[in-house]
Length: 454
Image (cartoon, rainbow, N blue to C red; front, side, top):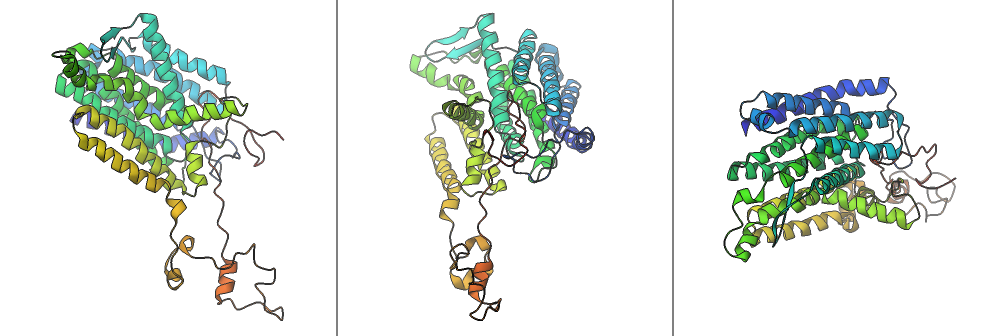
């Protein structure tokens, strides 16, 4: 565990220290797209944060290769080299897109080629456990197609959720932490060395996200861009593929006894089939809803719009920071809830705890609908959003701020204070800071709604 912690800290330190110089480099090279109608930031912000994250990944792998307890991962498996090869390819494509906005089909092809490169070097799904059947071996074509599909879905799901400052990096960090606990338990508790690469990948992924987050939290000084979002999506997918398709369920010796006992004991092995999707459940749900919504409206599935989950949170009244924290909460609840249930599936208290936390999450989600109003005597001691508005400016007559003689009313009166009080600002929906992973950005010179034609 100390070696994993050291690898995580080195990755985070390298990423953090390089992000500042990368920001200056992005400004110097002009990697600062104009503000679009769907963006929340009000000043041009540089991208290319994925450059620092990629060098953090390289530093983490280099350090792990020289640690005694982690060196065996590189000696017994070719998966770290496969990950580095695929990550380098997807990172180069992301950097080019951040700067030159390459075509959508080229990005999709690059994602598939990066996944194919990893498959060629051994990072692929070899078998899957099926409840009631056992271990099912896959042919080379089946394993390749399943691996490529998982990589492409994960990359685009992570990229779709990259719409608010710190959102994508934080959610992937939470997912990586949950995945690390699961993979480390398989390796440490069952003594299965095949789970070690997944533990290493997730530890490095946590370091990449933690090192970048201080620069990316609201208000962000730099965005990760496609070079970062596609990179962390690929690393997360590589960890899922490693622990799902490389760990032989028969090695756990759980398919013994009666059918019911074997099926119940095999739950920790069946979980990897769902764990990658549950960990990115929020991004995947956003991806599916976006495709359905755009197709229903006769648009391209990769056309930018304002219907993402984080858009809805802003529209109902949440602040930028609160919307991000709510997304963090639901991601952590789903990811850690699934991991906890895989460890103690017989304990009903885990289910009850998840249900209780879900109720808390719903209350937080709908909190702007139930904003309390302070009594009049306490209005001077609370923020403006909790004060009652007796006179609304748009309903008051034009002369409400003047007396009968046309002189300005006294500034200390309650009516003038209510009239001078600004209207509640309509939340401006946010947009994807990067582009969709396989869609092009729209260049909108004005503040028209994205997806409309002038």
